[in-house]
Length: 420
Ligand SMILES: [Zn+2]
Image (cartoon, helix red, strand yellow):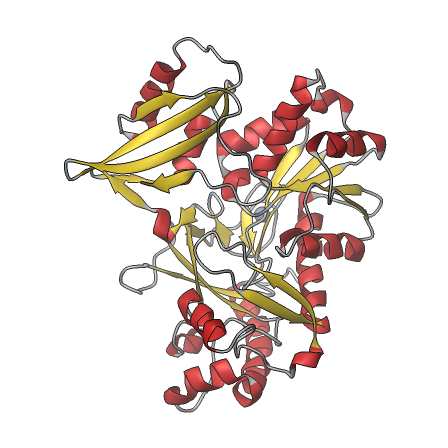
């Protein structure tokens, strides 16, 4: 990975990639040819000049696939050039299908190699993938990244949680890859049989994707303590690529060798200043077969260009992905992020699972926390949680305690936030 240079050097490298990509895409990619047709000539003389092009939105891509099913028209090559198909998790509406060519699939693997190396994974490590290997892209690409790195990849597909725990011990796995929610689920399953994973497993690094939890301080701490490992976050998206990684100084960086990032105020479309929160807009540089150009990810981030102690010159996303732009809620005049609520919930080791409900009462928004404790009778938990949420977020929530085993468990994208 080329990691030297200041911002000019980074942009120089990006320009060298984006110019030929746009030339090809404008010739043979029907989606972008049509979309950009009204914008005249393309003189991409700087990264800044890319901003003359219109944004790409998820809705446009979904509508395009509905109009021309199953794959739509964001295809730069004939269909026989594509060798992999994945789909989005569809947590917000219809899933999108996404195709990769040999070259773009190799690019995914290279991006994952960067993620694993940044977390400190070496050749010789044994990486356990606690993942079902369904059509969701995330850990398929991680699997390929492990091969690129020269580490051993162990599949946890088609197994129960207890089988996976046994495999982690039996194989002497040193790295765990899964969602943060699932890492904690494995811990609580292990505890039921008296197993202490920090002592009994060889896991030293965990890498998480699919949810922002590994950048939520209490969730990260809980994973690190219960696994006896260092926990790393990785933000990415099926239609965009594996765009972020966490370094040894524990900052989440955007991989600016492979992606061009812009940060926008989601309401006005104007750029946000360093330190302010904005929507992440991405152009990927290595997925010529099915690119996204100025794509509005819907992810809310807080950028920093301050140098990182790790020495990498790439943009930092402070706190990782803070949430989805759509999830930002105003309850009684207070901005509420799902990640902020999760941060408080994970401070209570008595809470096994939880769910957050936002509802309207007499034209006001109210928040209700449904908590599932580890044991059936935890005295005073509701009052303690209510108090902590009031101190931290400035809201008085309704709290309901439910019996163990009531709430759903998640292997992939956890859904805990509901507008009812
Ligand atoms: Zn760093």
